[in-house]
Length: 135
Image (cartoon, rainbow, N blue to C red; front, top):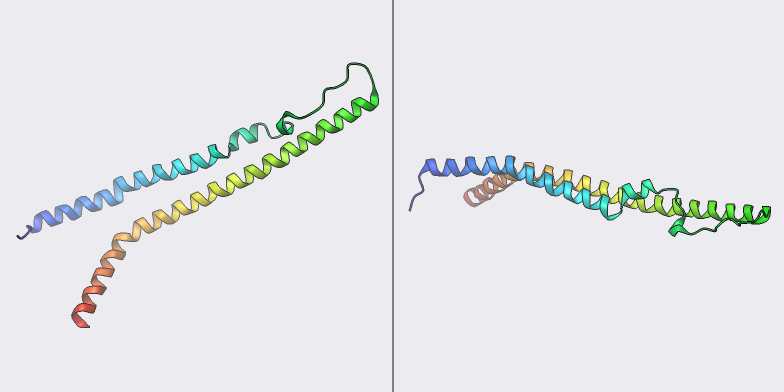
């Protein structure tokens, strides 16, 4: 059974419209979902908002009575807890941004591969047929 030439051209046209139209939108949405996941999994915005909060809310309460040694000691411990909190949060933020940038560049590579894939497959078919015909 022979497929009419017009139907084959219509099929090719529909494929190219899908490949370079709807598929790009779908890839973009999936790509942005992965980036959104990285930002939310590592809570990057929340960690920036609470960057200088004490680590795990650890700290000491200031004494009720005036005792300069205890006030200074409490102040130093609270500052140290804030520094530790900032360091741990910065490490997690760095890891999260590294993963987000990795996802970004992988998405760019996927878009590039998706763009050249039809040309690559046609070239492979032509090369295969030429090897079959001309040995």
